[in-house]
Length: 385
Ligand code: HMG
Image (tube, rainbow, N blue to C red):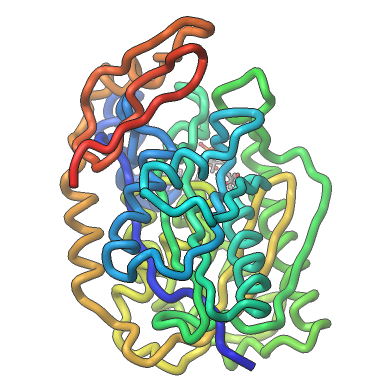
């Protein structure tokens, strides 16, 4: 069977960042609650001229510069920060990236899980047409109400992945474990720009979905725990990965090396929750910070509230390690402009007026920007290159 999987990947985030120590000092919380209790240091925050389209296109652009556009016939955008009830965000991204018309483009949604559905759909398409490539983009803006318990777990970011045959990073193995359960742990109603969440229930639902997906993986003949070198998890906050690993070790009755928890959290600690992109930001961090994974099996646990989850595994390709990738991500994270709490609160409260033309202020230094709304249609431009 031709190996199929992630050939290249890249991460993008926002213009602004809020330090959680700054937030803690402003709201009278012990900063250790955020730093140690939930395991977060910072959260990315979009400028008015940024959204999932600008972040998604910015993540994908270097992939196209490195690999070319030849063979890309499918663009899948996974998000729960949808910008339109009808048009797929990928159609704007397709135009911004200058992709040819001969591409099928679609948006996928199921909370934070949908990027994994997109990856599996890509693997399916390529099993039939291994000469093609699929561009998968996961992009989200995580928003909770100001002063709510969810507030320090906000964030924003995008991961773009080029999926192909004979991948240079991770081959996705054919067997995976899946799990669906109807639970009201977290959702965002159509009339709300922030999520509704029952925090304690969401943590229980996540852990139950983990053991459910693991049991299904075992029932499908998947690998045993001992043969998995590292596991990366969906990370709404990085402490969640720790909770997940403890639960899995107990449930599956085995040891899991703790090293991957630290390395797999390097980017997520600074991005905050990136919903659909979170698991793949964690995978990027693992690949960028561990040099001895070639030929080893990694596990990926994907969870989307509501809920759908999947436990999949992959084999890391020889020659995957590339120190330039880690340097690029750190540059992107370090380049963010810090916000004071008053600026953050004002930005958070700003909503686009409905039904009128709008021009957004020019803030972002990213290669693409959201310029505003004309005749109720969103407008974008390429700012560089
Ligand atoms: P909270 O009520 O503010 O926090 O909400 P807490 O009181 O439960 O404390 C959190 C941790 O900090 C605890 O540790 C405390 O002990 C510790 P734990 O018992 O969990 O190990 N702590 C301290 N540690 C050190 N020094 C201190 C200190 N004080 C307390 N001084 C909660 C926390 C995560 C519930 C909240 O932020 C929230 O509701 N977040 C949003 C929901 C969420 O992220 N759920 C995760 C699972 S669901 C999921 O992953 C899906 C999602 O990504 C969406 C999607 O699928 O689309 C969310």
